[in-house]
Length: 149
Ligand code: DAT
Ligand code: MG
Image (cartoon, rainbow, N blue to C red; front, side, top):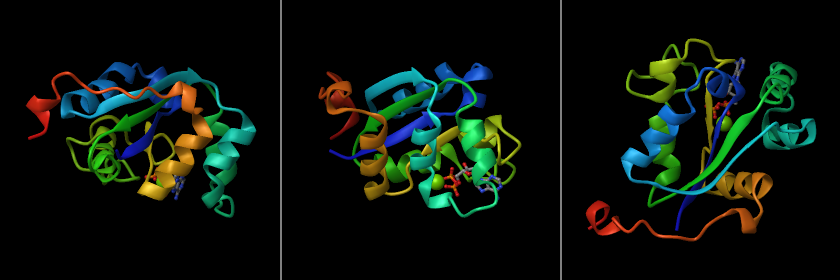
């Protein structure tokens, strides 16, 4: 079953948006299989954003993401990787569509509230970076027949 890694960044936690954001994925019909609040270490943050290490904003990005608690999650469902990216919206919140999380709650690219894996392979890498197997639950929503034909 397809899974994606989602993180509510320190700005989303500080702004009290944890419940709102989790609620959107729940209401959509995806399944929460991993959840924890933590302050990411420098090492974890650098690994997570490794692909951006040559970019001019890398240092600020790592320092921001390690600046306070974030909520790390794994969500499961058919097509969840691409769908979560659409729920999240464009990287720049000013161009993110209204109705998306970034479009509804943010104004600045450096404070865009939430991370979501950009592809299935990225999701696998990020999930294993942030979670152990024991921290992930294999379970099925009892209402699944009401969500999936
Ligand atoms: P996304 O988070 O939508 O996957 P990304 O992977 O291109 O976007 O970049 C990772 C994060 O880095 C992004 O959420 C915010 C920050 N970032 C990206 N481009 C930036 C820029 N031009 N200036 C400052 N921060 C930037
Ligand atoms: Mg990205």
